[in-house]
Structures are given as C-alpha cells and as structure tokens.
Image (cartoon, rainbow, N blue to C red):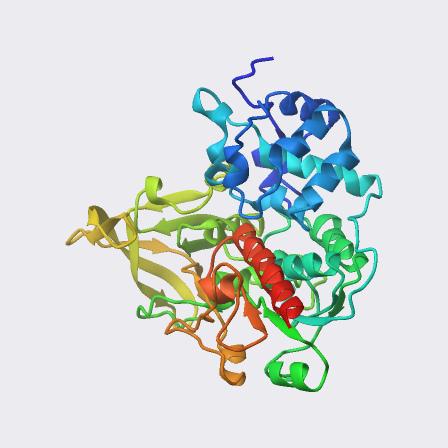
Length: 461
C-alpha cells in the first residue's frame, strides 16, 4: 500500500449514474476504511481538528477505526456532531479538515470525510444510537427550523438535558438537507431520515407545518408557551436573480425551486403530484455547489446541460469533487461567460439565451479577479430552460414579526458569532439565517455555538 495516496473510493460509472438518482459515491467497506485509517499519523497537535467547524476529535475516531471499533469511533464523533453520515458526504473537507492534514503536505491527505461516512453508515447498520442525557434539567427551548443548524443545536441541547422542540415550516423535517441537496449526493430515506431519527432518539420533538411568524410567533412561544430561549436556524431560502431582460419567461427557474421540486417532492418520478419540466437543453447560471446540483439533476432528467459561469475554472466556488463528477457525467462548462438576455418564443417559453464572453481583470473585494466584458463577443445558446443559481438570502418573515430582533440590510439576523446571541434577550440565531448562504458544516458549527450560548444563558439566570 502506498501510504502517500488515499485508498480509492468506489463510485458508480459516470455513464450509468448520469441516468439515475442513486448515490454516486459507494463509500468504503471495512477493509478499505481500516487501510485508510492506517495512513493517519495521529499528530500530537492535530491541525485537522482546528480545520473542523464542529471540532471533531478526528485522530481519536480514526484510531478507533484502525482498531475495528466502530461503536467507539461513533461515540467519539457523537461528542461533537449529531449528523456524521451527512457531514461525511457533503462537507467541503478539502478546504477544512483534509486541507490541514499533515499527511497532505507531501502526499494526499487522509480521507477523513469518507472515514466519517463509513463510521456513521456502519453504526446505523449495527443499530447504534447516539448517547442521550441521563436526565432532563427541566428547561424548555424552542428551535426554529430543522436544517443543519437547527438539528445540531437541538441535538446538543438535548444531550445537555434540555426539553427541546423544533418548529419546521415544511411538511418534512431536514431543511436544505431534504429540499436542496440531490438524492445522488445525499440519500433522503437511507441517510437524512435516519439522522433525524437519531436526533429524535435524544428526546427532541419536531413539529412540522408550523410557520413561525405566521402560525406562531417567537414572542408567543416565550411568553405563553414556557420556552426560556429560542434558537433561529431558518436558513436562507429566498433566491436571487440577475434582473436581465426575459427573466420572467416560462422555463426560467431558481435553482431553489428546481431542486425543491425534484428532491422534496420527488418530481422526477412519473407518479409525482408535483411535475417538473424535463428540458431538452438546460442552461444553469452560476458556479457553486447548488449550480452543480441543479445541472446534474437536469442531466438526469434528460437534458443536454450547460453551466454558464462568468469567471474561470480556477474561481469556481463549487467543490472540486462536484466539478469533476459533473464533467465526468458530460455536463458542458461555458466559462468566462455571462448571460445578458433570455429570449422567449411567441407562447412565452424560453427558446434561448444571449451571453457575452468575459476576461479576468483586477481582483475585486472578494479577492478574486473581476470579470470584464469582451466588447462585441455576444453569442447565442439555444435552450428551453434556464436555471438561476446565484445564491439565496434569508426570508425576512422572522425578523419582521419579532419585536426587538435586529437584521442587517441583506435581511440577515444580527447575532454574536461566538454564542449566537441576538439583539433580543433569550433569542439566539445561527447558520444561513445569520451569514447568508454557506455550507452545511458551517451551519452546524453555528448551531453548536448557539446551544452553548443558550446553556450559558439559562444556567446564568
């Protein structure tokens, strides 16, 4: 075994997986996981832990994998994370834990994410559950939103002995985990539902179809329902558009709507009650993970799929793995390209999109080189669907219906980064509702911080 290289992970063949919604990555088996675990140097000063937003004891759990002790590894991870099967699949490990791995200095870093997934999946198959609190402490906390921030906050508080209820606006718990990330990256029944069941096993109650700000208000929960603190983890589900001509044409989607229909409503199924347009040729505007998800979904629904992004491949914000998978599946990348107009036929349906070639100029505020239009470079892409993946912002419903809760000009709730405390006493917030659209693991880190802040607040009373 070459200790400088990762143990390869098995995947579906690109030509096969491009036609189905089954999970792309097949994960490690016992032999592969234990071999990969042997590559860990068990550093005395583990930089990988510093790179993890929820500070998992990575060398600790990998040591247990080396020993063949899956339960021990699961218990180590469980001290820091309530959603290991999810994190092992969707976290950007290459820029976090694996990006700090000492083994990666001269070779390839340890495949930490795949090992976390192996532990979580194997523990689930063995019927192992997370360890719950020995007794309740008599304090009630409400959590708004059942996405990664809300589930993490609720799970951590439950482990401390709190009586926690999650209020979820949709009919199914999971937030972005169920509506935003495709089945082929994150299986819903086999993984997400089981992780949520584990949170429930800690004693957390989940009420669905409850829109806080409409059917209930935060002030009511605290004054009339006996909740001593509230955590807001409502995410960022309000899509952004470019504001270019033709954007109102039929066949123009936000990636948010497109993925929600497909993932949550199973619109790709022939017997779905929420059908989705199965385009012949789709153009996805954007270069992040959500753009990759939308493009790969459109491909699986039968479309020739193009990604249009105004910067170069080096600046693509999506994970390298997602870009590689998209290319392997046959998605066309039109880079250094920016849309300027969407065209519709006489019936109002999309028929094509005009784009401009771009070139990179000086760096902008983000540190990336600013794209500049190349005069006279217009060209036309014929298509019957355009999917805008330009990011999202928080829904202002919570901040606008809660007295004394401050939000910034983007609609993001203002909260302390370390503990999640907002401008309203007893109300905490974290995740995309505070930062704007970010990653699952950063939302989890915020949920963890919020749980710590709530515990300190209530015990301090």
